[in-house]
Length: 490
Image (cartoon, rainbow, N blue to C red; front, side):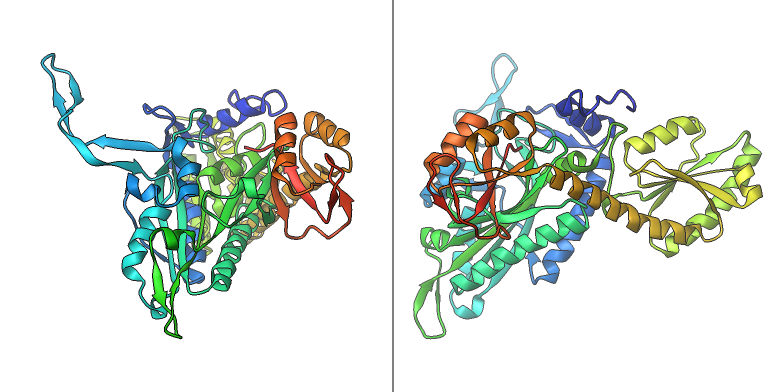
């Protein structure tokens, strides 16, 4: 263990919190249920945001921004949507403060808003009220817009990155002339999320459809990617929704088709949030701290000098300058930590804790021998290399670390995924092993609710790649054509 980090086996929840705090990712704020994302944590989020934004634009989307405040009347227009979010909404009722006779700051009772404003929990309503002004003809379609924003969902039980009252996310909102186009968009964006999760986060995911009870409020269909954390629980890492014409009808968004007919618009929405930070931590990290996939690491290489005096340090600085020039040429981010206030051992522990993929250590003897020590964060292996060509070694090693982290996570998921045919076996695995359980289900919300009530496991999704097979529901014995994915979840 490192710097007082609790062991995963001893207390997984505390281990997670220790890493978030001690790796300088985030901390609780003075506002209940809200967090401060610290510079190092935000730098990782920026890497996530930068790559996703690029992928969105490559698929034809553009960014815009919509108001934080949503008139309450907008929410009443789509019944299932307001029901889904009513218990989580923060509401603005007044617009002014005043000082009372005791010198206290209080709400000015004379400054009540004519209509209360909801602090956005999601933006469908404000965006579709806007689209009504933008859409008139088939020529105005499709609209492919993404928004990077903060949202508020008033959570009673919060946890840094995983569940906070305010969090950062992106939300895509698209408008189409046909259902087929909107459905294709919904699937396309889930594939974007899956590609990002696997190729950048090094986190294997399962794509599938949500059950009716797990759908987004106001959606006809919700599809998701589900990832397994190291405690065997699932984490929903991204969702995409086919909204049908529900919001178009609620806000009277129509267009004139090529045939001259007036029709309602078809819609999708999709989003990921700072929960991905929690996924990164829980999917890959160890008892020494954070383990970052190189593609999302703000600093890919840290260089620590080993020296006895200022003269040696100056010689090392010159040699390191040659190395870092070559790293710059390969666009590999680095940090040379020549702080004189900390010893090398302290620095080694710090960068292990922060998950920097590659650490170089160099001293006078190394320079004399033309060598340098390299340690990789994922396996903690150390090896001596020639200084000449070290940038090529690092470039190849970063790719290997990225692949190795993915392979390790995939192996863990495969080893902790079970097929069961009886409810007794299902309950035993959920209680004593955890992980993903593939089982037959009769398709009814009653059976789904019974399983959740008795085991705390939910249907994460109905995997797209689940083969058709005749089976019987583990509860009712009714026929089933394919297995669905159950797990306890965050």
